[in-house]
Length: 161
Ligand code: CUA
Picture 1 (cartoon, rainbow, N blue to C red):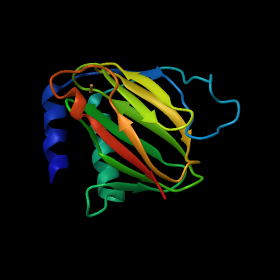
Picture 2 (picture 1 turned 120 degrees about the vertical axis):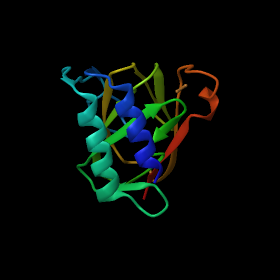
Picture 3 (picture 1 turned 90 degrees about the vertical axis):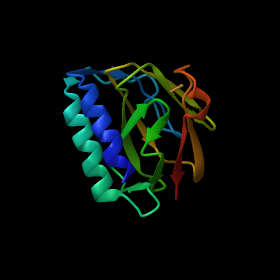
């Protein structure tokens, strides 16, 4: 599977620690949460890739997407030039915490919808956001930081169903 390949890549890059960048956004309406921030922590990259692999095993669908129940933490690798998993299915009305991680360069995560969200994912770091899936349908997940030749190809999607 493709997931094995990128996990191996991440291990080879062997970043030792990462910090959590406190960035929050709302997907739809989360009352009063806009400015709230997480504190930072550092965790080894192996921890992240382990979570990613477990997520794929537990929630992966045959089409390569993941479908997570409400209350889940969603792990997303942001790497030149893709988000993995590329397609994330959420349950309408559910609360989720997203944790992004970049093993290479600066990336962005932008959600194009009403009350749109923009965040920066710094290299060797995670970026965390909490969302409530209040908008049915497909939401584009775009990289909004120039990260190299394939920057414009770096997009994923979130499907609220
Ligand atoms: Cu990743 Cu632009």
